[in-house]
Image (tube, rainbow, N blue to C red; front, side):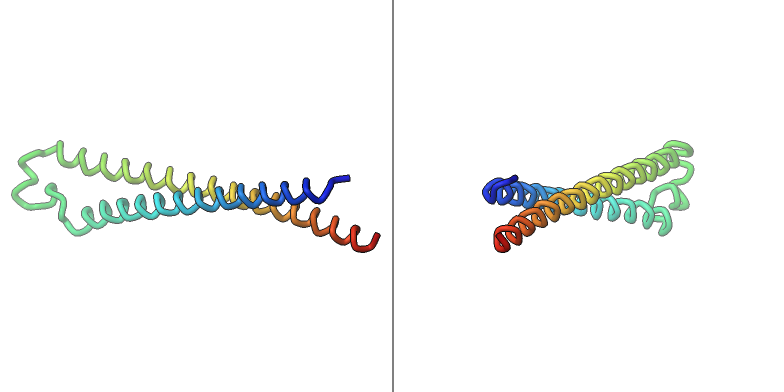
Length: 119
């Protein structure tokens, strides 16, 4: 049977892992927010006509170059946003798993306490 010290060490380790996973989730959330802001900025530029390709006189300056740049910008921010969302999902799953391990360790320690009191 496990001793109290082993169970408390397991709880402490699980809690430390959960805290680390929470910090990683917070970092992923910040990166995700920046990616969403970048994506929104590119979408706003496209819709409001701020990009040079939509200014009347500029359309003939770079007939195909500017359009390719705008499409490339949209693809780049779409990919960055998708990656940030995937990283956030991974971090969220890691935190959930760490929480489950912590709860299991805490339950084992509580059960040990109950059996110790009843004995």
